[in-house]
Image (cartoon, rainbow, N blue to C red; front, side):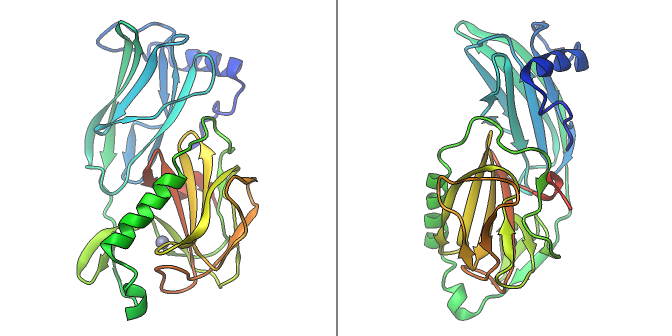
Length: 293
Ligand SMILES: [Zn+2]
C-alpha cells in the first residue's frame, strides 16, 4: 500500500494533501477548505486495511472517525495532521459503508467529510484442525479468555506516532503453510478464522522483527506459546507466536530485521512454524499486503 507522501516531512505533508485532494471535503455541510481527508482505497477485500490521513483545522476539540459500526482511535501526527488505520477481517460484513470523519469543537461538529467504502467478500477456505489429546486439553474457553485478557493488558499502551517505515519485512523467509483468514474447524465446530499467516520452517530458525517498534509482550502464553508482540505505533501491532525461544524483552526498542525469537512448536501448534499476525486498532488483518517478499 504505497502512500508516497506518508513519510514526508510535516510541512510537505500538509501542502501535499491540500494539492492532492482539493474539493474532497464535499459533505452535507460545507467543510472548511483546510479540512481534508485522504484514504488509501475505497474498495477493499475482507482482511485488508485502509490508511487514513486527515488534515484538520488547527486544534479541533477532537477528531472522530467512524467506519463499519465503530469509532476508531485517531493519532495526531502534527499541529493539523492526523492518521489512523481501519481494519477489516472475515467477520466484517461485505457491503457498502460510509466512512465519516468529523472535527468536533466545543459547540459541536465543525466539519464533516463522508466517503463511500465497499468491502468485498473473500471465499476463505476451511481447514480442519486436529491436535493430540494432550494439546487439545489446552483449548478451553477459560484458557482462551485468560489469554485474550493477558494480551489486552500487554497492548494497553499504544505508541502515538508511526515508528516503522513502509513496507514491513517478512519475519522469516519460508513457505506459507496456512494463509490468513482460513476458517478453523475444530471438533466439527468453526472456531473462528486464522488471524495471521503461518510459515513452516525448521525449529530454531531465527524470527525477525517486521519493522521498528517497541516490544509490548514477550512471554510464554498457554495457547500462543512463546510469543512476542511489537507496537509499531498508531495502533499497528505485529505478533510472532509458537516460538521455541524468545530473544526480546518488554520495553525493548527493536529495528526491522532484529532477531526476536526462534521458530518452534509451543502452545497450541501441530508442528514447528511461525504464526505472524498484524492488528490495527484491535482488528486482526492480513499482514501480507504490508510486506514485501
Ligand atoms: Zn497460525
